[in-house]
Image 1 (cartoon, helix red, strand yellow):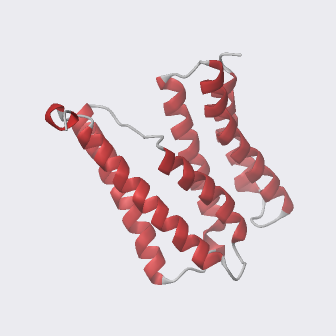
Image 2: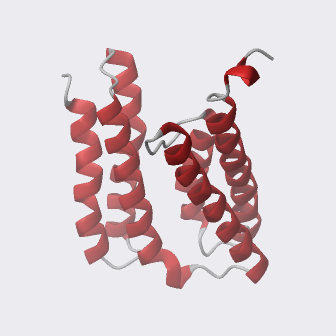
Length: 171
């Protein structure tokens, strides 16, 4: 039972291969997408519930999330009809997240991917929001998710710095 959350994360990575082989926006694509997404929701929940959380598991989950996002992004990129300003916002969020990763390494001497509530909300909304591609309300949904993602990224940067400044912890 101790390894089930890690196996779920590994299965998410494994599901990316068939996900890349099927056509986007088809039933097989969405079935694989939903199964992979469910593994993402279950791995952390089960690890916490069963008390088997580990640093390895958290990193494996982050790696699986990254691989899943890249695979889904690759398949759905041709379907995304977004305004240039929204692409700029998405790029800015990615830049803030990259700066956070670099800063976490500089400050903590290790790379940290924070699993804050804002990051979890962003991930869940992205998971659901992707399913609105092609709908008339997709762009407003994408803007909402991008704004929440920016908040989560900025919050993550603040946590990296504040948590590691002894004088700031006393405030």
